Image 1: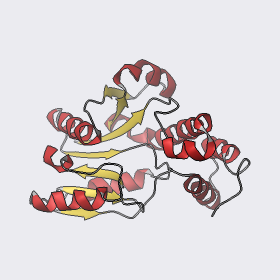
Image 2: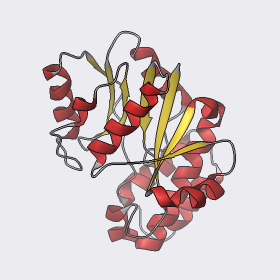
Image 3: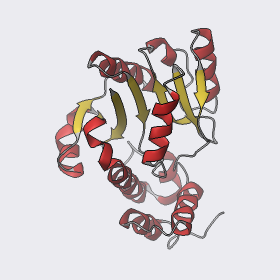
Image 4: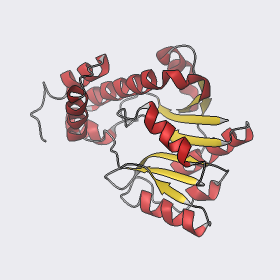
Length: 223
């Protein structure tokens, strides 16, 4: 069984998009985050039966259930840092019967079902799959067996995350493969890049229009 975990945060100023908030303000950053979550989930809707939303903080589950609508399974995130939360969430998915587990966040709304499929396919011949980002982190991680030690001794929120994770995999004797390089919407130029790419594809969902209003129409393009 395949299980997709989507890490979702409550859309609270100061809790989400803190780096972006320094550039466009906390309320606008929250609006970008909400649009990113809504677009991500709309694109993953065909996978909803195999998807679990992992919510931070746990007491925000009722609010987020009301926000995202019915049909999504939700569970709380637990752990003192991202590593502990990833370890706990993936271990729980495996204990629930998953054969392959893939985790994404909601900071990369360009991710599509085919990207998720590529990750699951790679796990047929590897224990770890990573989708690296151009800032040194990753937008996706997948496992074919429980490996909580994968998330130990990582300097989270630094440019070393992806490389350190690959080193952990090698140290644990796990075969790791990389997917294509992607990016998160952490800064204004990232949001504007995403908007440009979506419009070039000829797809202009409502979330992209919202982001356009919040960025291109308020700030000069920095690309």
